Image 1 (cartoon, rainbow, N blue to C red):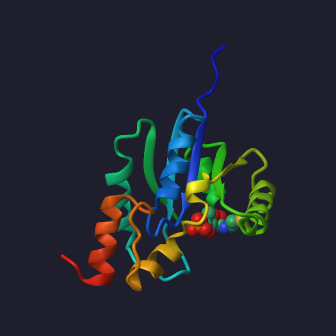
Image 2: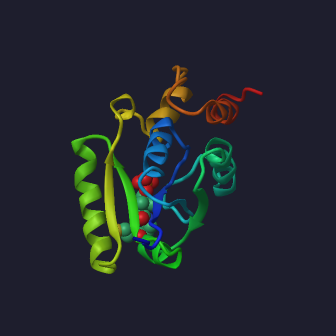
Length: 165
Ligand code: PNS
């Protein structure tokens, strides 16, 4: 039976995009017809990479994956989802500590727009300790982050934080 295409948003700051994010993208595209990676524009957090740099970085990493698009958004995530024709929001959960914040957001988003469903995917065990924040901290302090982010992202991080060419 024909059905409406399943469109999902995978939202986040992606400052920077990690292998944990990539794992989630690769697993999400198997579940939906179209996946839109939504980069939040007006984040309160001070970002290391500009939104344009993040679009570029993400493009380098996901361009070979079919049915994946990159977009940016301002304002409420559920409004962006609705404008994009998406009825699914995908979020990753790494550990129990993520759960409380994610549950709160999912419930608020459901209250705002009950027709949009949040779907949680568990991070792969190899990725459950990776976060953008820790990756930045480790590289800044001279630690090895290979395998934690895509090579192109590592190159940009080295340039930005260590001044390497
Ligand atoms: O992975 P991140 O960086 O924690 O992503 C957070 C994000 C972008 C999902 C969240 O901050 C968000 O949805 N912001 C948009 C504003 C909004 O809709 N706020 C109400 C959420 S309940």
